[in-house]
Image 1 (cartoon, rainbow, N blue to C red):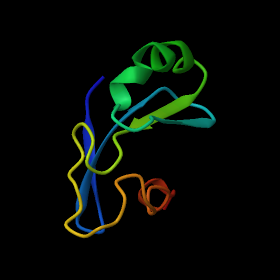
Image 2: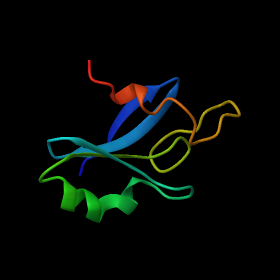
Image 3: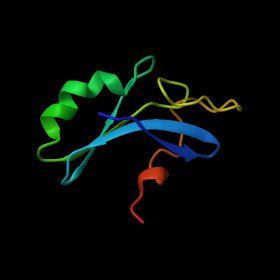
Image 4: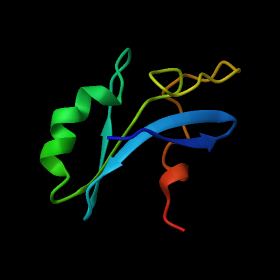
Length: 82
């Protein structure tokens, strides 16, 4: 799975996307990353559009300069359909 990147509020978010169909978003816990979902992504991608991302400050996502929590708001805006 290839990592893609999206810019949101000055922070780069890393994510992977696989499959087609209804979307399933996999959200990791603190001190983890999208890689914890690899087996689930492989199992879900034949029937679902599966998206897993790294929270701000985790994995391939950059950390914000301000005091906002790495798991804070905004994640839903960057994947909203046009």
